[in-house]
Amino acid sequence: MTYRSPRRRVTLFVTCIVDKIYPEIGKAAVALLEQQGIEIHVPRGLTCCGQMAFNAGYRDDAYAIAGRTLEVLRHQGDVVLPSGSCSAMIRHLYPELFHGTAHEAVAADLVGRSYELTEYLVDVLGVTNVGAQFPGRIAFHDACHGLRFIGLQTQGRQLLSHVADAELVPLTGCDECCGFGGLFAVKQSAISEAMLARKLQHIEESKADLVVMGDASCMTQIAGGLNRGGSHVRARHIVEVLANGANAR
Image (cartoon, rainbow, N blue to C red; front, top):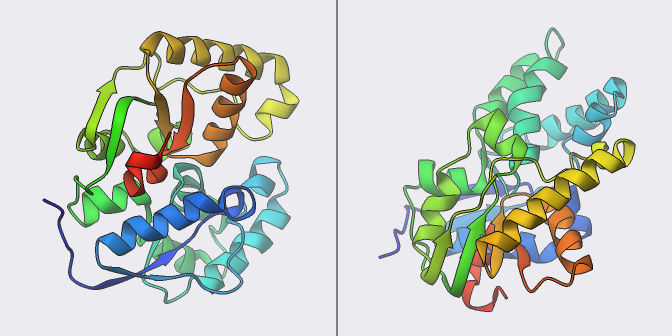
């Protein structure tokens, strides 16, 4: 039975890659939250968390971008992101980026009310069954930032375990990086390709129909490798499966 929360208002931070490349993930996130009786708000001018500039070492640019994000999200209630990576940037790295600055208190406030989407469903709303359905075998990949920076490990699996007609199968090396790592895939392409090859081998060995994850960046890396290899396995963001399980193939 699906839990219906009291009427809540959530600010959805869809993230850059979803906004520009995978709008279907953003739409699925809206559908999934609205199914739980959530009122969704997306502030105008909300763009990037600043992670790309931060990881590239451009701290001044990251400070400017993230500072604007702080202002846009000020007084916006709970902020939910369909990304462990962007959530980790806010929760784990904003305190470092804004330490000792005029934005330090505002950043600390945002850290305390920001959640990755599966974390929000399970840990805040108490939801584990969203009424999704998928007739096939699902393997779950733990995206690095969500797993290591904000402790996402059980939430996605709890939600997937309640998807009707689906079998959640083990994935060897599920907690190993897919090799994307943002600029890492560009600057260390040979290592990135070797890491991806290992990940793809384990996915094929799992005999899954879908490999599911909580970050669109990992999905891009893994989906590209599967496609180039002619695999029948498809990579999907977890919100797509939870919001529209029957059509996730």
